[in-house]
Length: 115
Ligand SMILES: [Cu+2]
Image (cartoon, rainbow, N blue to C red):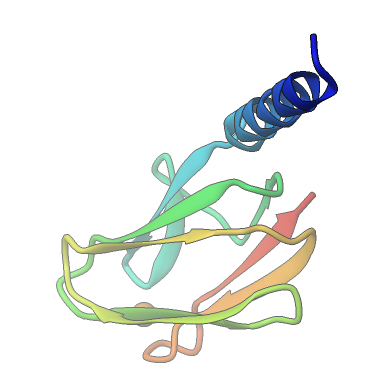
């Protein structure tokens, strides 16, 4: 095998492995906004622990708009306002703690601990 071909195989293999490890084990969680609370599987949640690379789907189950934003150092975002039945997703790609709030309902907050 020529050095050229073997180095190409190494690059291809590395690329394939990295693609697999990036997708392996990544979970998607659904967090509903219901009665101005964050809910997971029907129970109120104030803090959740996820892994780097996991995605959280936020689904509005209330009859009014919700918004979700984070000013946290690990990940800052603003999902805008979305109506009943609509959802928005966030993939957390940095370890640390993110504090999420709703700009419309200041009493709503959720801590996402990304391990
Ligand atoms: Cu809200």
